[in-house]
Length: 372
Image (cartoon, rainbow, N blue to C red):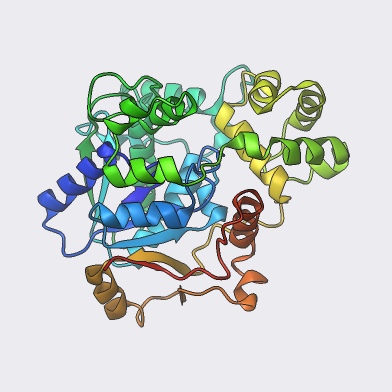
Protein backbone atom coordinates (compact mmCIF):
# COMPACT_ATOMS: atom_id res chain seq x y z
CA UNK A 1 0.00 0.00 0.00
CA UNK A 2 0.93 3.64 -0.50
CA UNK A 3 0.08 5.69 2.55
CA UNK A 4 0.33 8.89 4.53
CA UNK A 5 -1.72 7.89 7.59
CA UNK A 6 -2.35 11.50 8.52
CA UNK A 7 -3.58 10.30 10.95
CA UNK A 8 -4.13 6.52 10.90
CA UNK A 9 -7.93 6.09 11.10
CA UNK A 10 -10.63 3.43 10.90
CA UNK A 11 -10.77 3.68 7.11
CA UNK A 12 -7.09 2.76 6.92
CA UNK A 13 -7.64 -0.16 9.27
CA UNK A 14 -10.56 -1.38 7.13
CA UNK A 15 -8.52 -1.06 3.93
CA UNK A 16 -5.61 -3.01 5.41
CA UNK A 17 -7.81 -5.79 6.82
CA UNK A 18 -9.72 -6.08 3.52
CA UNK A 19 -6.54 -6.21 1.45
CA UNK A 20 -5.05 -8.92 3.67
CA UNK A 21 -8.27 -10.95 3.55
CA UNK A 22 -8.69 -10.72 -0.24
CA UNK A 23 -5.07 -11.50 -1.05
CA UNK A 24 -4.11 -13.91 1.73
CA UNK A 25 -0.86 -11.94 1.82
CA UNK A 26 2.19 -13.34 3.59
CA UNK A 27 3.32 -9.83 4.46
CA UNK A 28 1.78 -6.35 4.29
CA UNK A 29 3.98 -3.40 3.35
CA UNK A 30 3.29 0.35 3.26
CA UNK A 31 5.45 2.95 1.59
CA UNK A 32 4.63 6.03 3.69
CA UNK A 33 5.37 9.73 3.31
CA UNK A 34 7.74 11.12 5.92
CA UNK A 35 7.19 14.35 7.85
CA UNK A 36 5.66 16.23 4.89
CA UNK A 37 2.82 14.80 2.83
CA UNK A 38 1.93 14.95 -0.84
CA UNK A 39 -0.36 18.00 -0.64
CA UNK A 40 2.41 20.08 0.91
CA UNK A 41 1.31 19.84 4.55
CA UNK A 42 3.24 18.80 7.65
CA UNK A 43 1.99 15.47 8.99
CA UNK A 44 0.07 15.88 12.26
CA UNK A 45 2.23 13.22 13.92
CA UNK A 46 5.80 12.50 12.91
CA UNK A 47 6.82 9.53 10.77
CA UNK A 48 7.86 7.40 13.77
CA UNK A 49 4.60 7.93 15.64
CA UNK A 50 2.59 7.15 12.51
CA UNK A 51 4.71 4.04 11.84
CA UNK A 52 4.01 2.72 15.32
CA UNK A 53 0.26 3.25 14.89
CA UNK A 54 0.30 1.42 11.54
CA UNK A 55 2.18 -1.56 13.01
CA UNK A 56 -0.16 -1.72 15.99
CA UNK A 57 -3.08 -1.97 13.58
CA UNK A 58 -1.80 -4.81 11.42
CA UNK A 59 0.94 -3.67 9.04
CA UNK A 60 4.15 -5.70 8.89
CA UNK A 61 6.65 -3.31 7.29
CA UNK A 62 6.72 0.48 6.88
CA UNK A 63 9.21 2.10 4.50
CA UNK A 64 9.73 5.83 4.06
CA UNK A 65 8.86 7.44 0.74
CA UNK A 66 11.73 9.92 0.20
CA UNK A 67 10.88 13.62 0.40
CA UNK A 68 11.87 14.10 -3.26
CA UNK A 69 9.01 11.76 -4.21
CA UNK A 70 6.56 12.36 -1.37
CA UNK A 71 6.10 16.13 -1.81
CA UNK A 72 5.36 16.07 -5.52
CA UNK A 73 2.46 16.22 -7.98
CA UNK A 74 0.43 13.01 -7.95
CA UNK A 75 2.11 11.32 -10.93
CA UNK A 76 5.61 11.69 -9.46
CA UNK A 77 4.38 10.71 -5.98
CA UNK A 78 2.79 7.59 -7.45
CA UNK A 79 5.78 6.68 -9.61
CA UNK A 80 8.20 6.85 -6.68
CA UNK A 81 5.95 4.85 -4.36
CA UNK A 82 5.04 2.17 -6.92
CA UNK A 83 8.70 1.67 -7.84
CA UNK A 84 9.60 1.27 -4.18
CA UNK A 85 6.91 -1.38 -3.64
CA UNK A 86 8.08 -3.21 -6.74
CA UNK A 87 11.67 -3.23 -5.50
CA UNK A 88 10.45 -4.67 -2.20
CA UNK A 89 8.96 -7.66 -4.03
CA UNK A 90 5.26 -6.85 -3.64
CA UNK A 91 2.97 -8.75 -6.00
CA UNK A 92 -0.27 -6.86 -5.24
CA UNK A 93 -0.90 -3.11 -4.97
CA UNK A 94 -4.01 -2.30 -2.90
CA UNK A 95 -5.57 1.16 -2.74
CA UNK A 96 -8.85 2.78 -1.78
CA UNK A 97 -11.10 4.16 -4.50
CA UNK A 98 -14.49 5.81 -4.65
CA UNK A 99 -15.27 3.72 -7.76
CA UNK A 100 -13.15 0.54 -7.59
CA UNK A 101 -14.80 -0.88 -10.75
CA UNK A 102 -13.55 2.06 -12.81
CA UNK A 103 -11.55 1.10 -15.90
CA UNK A 104 -8.23 2.47 -14.62
CA UNK A 105 -6.27 0.71 -17.38
CA UNK A 106 -8.20 2.47 -20.14
CA UNK A 107 -7.67 5.82 -18.42
CA UNK A 108 -3.93 5.13 -18.11
CA UNK A 109 -3.73 4.10 -21.76
CA UNK A 110 -5.32 7.41 -22.82
CA UNK A 111 -3.31 9.78 -20.66
CA UNK A 112 -1.73 12.66 -22.62
CA UNK A 113 1.86 12.13 -23.67
CA UNK A 114 2.80 15.77 -23.11
CA UNK A 115 1.40 18.46 -20.83
CA UNK A 116 2.54 21.30 -23.07
CA UNK A 117 0.86 19.78 -26.12
CA UNK A 118 -2.58 19.60 -24.51
CA UNK A 119 -2.83 22.15 -21.73
CA UNK A 120 -2.13 25.67 -22.92
CA UNK A 121 -5.03 27.34 -21.13
CA UNK A 122 -4.22 29.35 -18.03
CA UNK A 123 -7.73 29.85 -16.65
CA UNK A 124 -8.04 26.40 -14.98
CA UNK A 125 -5.91 24.22 -12.74
CA UNK A 126 -3.90 21.42 -14.31
CA UNK A 127 -5.99 18.67 -12.59
CA UNK A 128 -9.19 20.14 -14.08
CA UNK A 129 -7.71 20.33 -17.57
CA UNK A 130 -6.30 16.81 -17.20
CA UNK A 131 -9.66 15.33 -16.17
CA UNK A 132 -11.49 17.16 -18.97
CA UNK A 133 -9.04 15.71 -21.49
CA UNK A 134 -9.43 12.14 -20.18
CA UNK A 135 -13.21 12.45 -20.10
CA UNK A 136 -13.21 13.54 -23.74
CA UNK A 137 -11.03 10.56 -24.67
CA UNK A 138 -12.73 7.85 -22.59
CA UNK A 139 -16.09 9.14 -21.34
CA UNK A 140 -14.93 8.39 -17.77
CA UNK A 141 -15.19 11.09 -15.09
CA UNK A 142 -12.08 11.10 -12.93
CA UNK A 143 -12.87 13.75 -10.33
CA UNK A 144 -12.96 11.77 -7.07
CA UNK A 145 -9.71 12.15 -5.10
CA UNK A 146 -8.88 8.50 -4.50
CA UNK A 147 -9.90 7.55 -8.04
CA UNK A 148 -7.36 10.09 -9.29
CA UNK A 149 -4.64 8.61 -7.07
CA UNK A 150 -5.65 5.11 -8.18
CA UNK A 151 -5.28 6.18 -11.79
CA UNK A 152 -1.75 7.48 -11.14
CA UNK A 153 -0.85 4.23 -9.35
CA UNK A 154 -2.10 2.13 -12.27
CA UNK A 155 -0.27 4.33 -14.78
CA UNK A 156 2.98 3.99 -12.81
CA UNK A 157 2.45 0.26 -12.37
CA UNK A 158 2.08 -0.20 -16.13
CA UNK A 159 5.57 1.22 -16.58
CA UNK A 160 7.13 -1.56 -14.48
CA UNK A 161 8.91 -4.46 -16.13
CA UNK A 162 6.77 -6.82 -14.04
CA UNK A 163 3.57 -4.97 -13.06
CA UNK A 164 1.88 -5.82 -9.78
CA UNK A 165 -1.72 -7.04 -9.54
CA UNK A 166 -4.03 -4.08 -8.86
CA UNK A 167 -6.55 -4.32 -6.01
CA UNK A 168 -8.88 -1.28 -5.76
CA UNK A 169 -10.91 -1.39 -2.53
CA UNK A 170 -14.24 0.42 -2.11
CA UNK A 171 -13.79 3.53 -0.04
CA UNK A 172 -16.42 3.70 2.69
CA UNK A 173 -18.36 6.68 4.05
CA UNK A 174 -17.14 10.20 3.33
CA UNK A 175 -15.24 11.58 0.39
CA UNK A 176 -11.50 12.00 0.88
CA UNK A 177 -11.77 15.80 0.85
CA UNK A 178 -14.94 16.00 2.94
CA UNK A 179 -14.42 18.04 6.11
CA UNK A 180 -17.50 16.67 7.90
CA UNK A 181 -17.27 13.69 10.24
CA UNK A 182 -20.89 12.58 9.86
CA UNK A 183 -22.41 9.65 11.76
CA UNK A 184 -20.22 6.83 10.43
CA UNK A 185 -17.31 5.15 12.22
CA UNK A 186 -15.20 5.98 9.15
CA UNK A 187 -14.29 9.52 8.10
CA UNK A 188 -11.76 11.21 5.84
CA UNK A 189 -8.41 12.40 7.10
CA UNK A 190 -9.43 15.95 6.16
CA UNK A 191 -12.53 15.72 8.36
CA UNK A 192 -10.53 14.34 11.26
CA UNK A 193 -7.88 17.06 10.99
CA UNK A 194 -10.63 19.73 10.93
CA UNK A 195 -12.30 18.19 13.98
CA UNK A 196 -8.98 18.24 15.82
CA UNK A 197 -8.60 21.98 15.25
CA UNK A 198 -11.98 22.38 16.96
CA UNK A 199 -11.12 19.89 19.76
CA UNK A 200 -14.07 17.63 18.90
CA UNK A 201 -12.61 14.71 20.84
CA UNK A 202 -15.80 12.61 21.25
CA UNK A 203 -16.40 12.77 17.49
CA UNK A 204 -12.75 11.93 16.69
CA UNK A 205 -12.88 8.97 19.08
CA UNK A 206 -15.58 7.40 16.89
CA UNK A 207 -13.46 7.35 13.73
CA UNK A 208 -9.92 6.41 14.83
CA UNK A 209 -8.44 3.41 16.64
CA UNK A 210 -7.79 3.86 20.36
CA UNK A 211 -4.02 4.00 19.78
CA UNK A 212 -4.44 6.92 17.38
CA UNK A 213 -6.74 8.76 19.77
CA UNK A 214 -4.22 8.38 22.58
CA UNK A 215 -1.38 9.62 20.38
CA UNK A 216 -3.35 12.65 19.21
CA UNK A 217 -4.29 13.56 22.78
CA UNK A 218 -0.83 13.07 24.30
CA UNK A 219 1.68 13.89 21.53
CA UNK A 220 2.42 17.27 20.01
CA UNK A 221 0.73 17.69 16.64
CA UNK A 222 2.08 20.03 13.98
CA UNK A 223 0.30 22.17 11.36
CA UNK A 224 1.39 24.87 8.91
CA UNK A 225 0.77 27.50 11.59
CA UNK A 226 3.98 26.42 13.33
CA UNK A 227 6.03 27.12 10.19
CA UNK A 228 4.28 30.30 9.04
CA UNK A 229 6.79 32.76 10.65
CA UNK A 230 9.71 30.85 9.06
CA UNK A 231 8.02 30.76 5.66
CA UNK A 232 7.06 34.42 5.79
CA UNK A 233 10.63 35.42 6.58
CA UNK A 234 11.98 33.33 3.69
CA UNK A 235 9.55 34.87 1.21
CA UNK A 236 10.15 38.44 2.35
CA UNK A 237 13.93 38.16 2.76
CA UNK A 238 14.65 36.56 -0.60
CA UNK A 239 14.81 38.45 -3.85
CA UNK A 240 12.58 37.59 -6.79
CA UNK A 241 15.64 36.15 -8.56
CA UNK A 242 16.34 33.84 -5.60
CA UNK A 243 12.71 32.69 -5.46
CA UNK A 244 12.75 31.96 -9.19
CA UNK A 245 15.37 29.26 -8.54
CA UNK A 246 13.02 27.34 -6.22
CA UNK A 247 11.81 23.98 -7.55
CA UNK A 248 8.52 24.22 -9.54
CA UNK A 249 8.34 28.00 -9.18
CA UNK A 250 6.77 29.13 -12.46
CA UNK A 251 4.41 31.49 -14.26
CA UNK A 252 5.43 34.45 -12.13
CA UNK A 253 3.80 33.06 -8.98
CA UNK A 254 6.84 34.23 -6.97
CA UNK A 255 5.60 37.84 -7.21
CA UNK A 256 2.20 36.86 -5.85
CA UNK A 257 3.71 34.79 -3.02
CA UNK A 258 5.92 37.64 -1.96
CA UNK A 259 3.04 40.15 -1.92
CA UNK A 260 0.74 37.73 -0.10
CA UNK A 261 3.40 37.12 2.57
CA UNK A 262 3.68 40.88 3.10
CA UNK A 263 -0.06 41.35 3.63
CA UNK A 264 -1.20 38.09 5.29
CA UNK A 265 -2.04 37.69 8.97
CA UNK A 266 -1.57 33.93 9.10
CA UNK A 267 -0.91 30.96 6.81
CA UNK A 268 -4.53 30.40 5.76
CA UNK A 269 -4.89 34.11 4.96
CA UNK A 270 -1.66 33.86 2.96
CA UNK A 271 -2.99 30.93 0.91
CA UNK A 272 -6.23 32.77 0.12
CA UNK A 273 -4.31 35.83 -1.06
CA UNK A 274 -1.90 33.77 -3.18
CA UNK A 275 -4.54 31.52 -4.78
CA UNK A 276 -5.16 31.78 -8.52
CA UNK A 277 -7.32 29.78 -10.94
CA UNK A 278 -4.18 28.12 -12.29
CA UNK A 279 -2.64 27.06 -8.96
CA UNK A 280 -4.40 24.61 -6.65
CA UNK A 281 -3.97 24.97 -2.89
CA UNK A 282 -1.92 21.76 -2.89
CA UNK A 283 0.45 23.14 -5.50
CA UNK A 284 0.85 26.36 -3.52
CA UNK A 285 1.55 24.43 -0.32
CA UNK A 286 4.18 22.28 -2.03
CA UNK A 287 5.85 25.45 -3.28
CA UNK A 288 5.88 26.74 0.29
CA UNK A 289 7.61 23.56 1.48
CA UNK A 290 10.23 23.98 -1.25
CA UNK A 291 10.79 27.59 -0.17
CA UNK A 292 11.14 26.56 3.48
CA UNK A 293 13.72 23.88 2.66
CA UNK A 294 15.35 25.89 -0.13
CA UNK A 295 14.74 23.11 -2.66
CA UNK A 296 16.10 24.43 -5.95
CA UNK A 297 15.60 23.15 -9.48
CA UNK A 298 18.93 21.33 -9.24
CA UNK A 299 18.12 19.29 -6.11
CA UNK A 300 15.14 16.87 -6.49
CA UNK A 301 15.95 13.35 -7.63
CA UNK A 302 12.99 11.02 -8.16
CA UNK A 303 15.11 7.90 -8.69
CA UNK A 304 14.91 5.26 -5.95
CA UNK A 305 18.37 5.35 -4.36
CA UNK A 306 17.75 3.75 -0.96
CA UNK A 307 15.14 2.05 1.20
CA UNK A 308 14.73 3.68 4.63
CA UNK A 309 13.09 1.31 7.07
CA UNK A 310 10.77 3.00 9.57
CA UNK A 311 9.45 -0.06 11.37
CA UNK A 312 8.41 -3.71 11.24
CA UNK A 313 6.58 -6.51 12.98
CA UNK A 314 8.22 -9.91 13.48
CA UNK A 315 6.76 -11.01 10.14
CA UNK A 316 8.06 -7.86 8.47
CA UNK A 317 11.52 -8.33 9.95
CA UNK A 318 11.70 -11.91 8.70
CA UNK A 319 10.64 -10.81 5.22
CA UNK A 320 13.15 -7.96 5.18
CA UNK A 321 15.97 -10.28 6.24
CA UNK A 322 15.05 -12.57 3.36
CA UNK A 323 15.09 -9.93 0.63
CA UNK A 324 17.55 -7.24 1.69
CA UNK A 325 20.61 -8.90 0.15
CA UNK A 326 18.92 -9.01 -3.24
CA UNK A 327 17.52 -5.47 -3.20
CA UNK A 328 19.17 -3.27 -5.86
CA UNK A 329 19.37 -0.31 -3.44
CA UNK A 330 20.84 0.00 0.08
CA UNK A 331 18.59 -0.75 3.06
CA UNK A 332 18.95 2.05 5.63
CA UNK A 333 18.09 1.44 9.28
CA UNK A 334 20.45 4.02 10.78
CA UNK A 335 21.35 7.42 9.33
CA UNK A 336 25.06 8.29 9.35
CA UNK A 337 26.84 11.52 8.38
CA UNK A 338 27.58 10.06 4.95
CA UNK A 339 23.85 9.63 4.34
CA UNK A 340 22.93 13.00 5.83
CA UNK A 341 25.42 14.75 3.54
CA UNK A 342 24.54 12.52 0.60
CA UNK A 343 21.36 10.84 -0.67
CA UNK A 344 19.37 11.49 2.52
CA UNK A 345 20.07 15.22 2.63
CA UNK A 346 16.55 16.49 1.82
CA UNK A 347 14.83 14.01 4.14
CA UNK A 348 17.18 14.98 6.95
CA UNK A 349 16.50 18.68 6.40
CA UNK A 350 12.74 18.04 6.38
CA UNK A 351 13.04 16.16 9.67
CA UNK A 352 15.30 18.82 11.17
CA UNK A 353 12.71 21.48 10.40
CA UNK A 354 10.10 19.54 12.35
CA UNK A 355 12.58 18.85 15.12
CA UNK A 356 13.00 22.62 15.56
CA UNK A 357 9.28 22.81 16.37
CA UNK A 358 8.80 19.69 18.52
CA UNK A 359 12.25 19.01 19.95
CA UNK A 360 11.82 15.32 19.01
CA UNK A 361 14.77 13.85 17.06
CA UNK A 362 13.78 12.60 13.62
CA UNK A 363 16.82 10.87 12.20
CA UNK A 364 20.21 10.82 13.92
CA UNK A 365 19.10 9.00 17.06
CA UNK A 366 16.20 7.02 15.59
CA UNK A 367 16.06 3.30 14.84
CA UNK A 368 13.20 1.38 13.24
CA UNK A 369 10.09 0.91 15.35
CA UNK A 370 9.79 -2.77 16.30
CA UNK A 371 6.41 -4.28 17.13
CA UNK A 372 6.95 -6.85 19.87
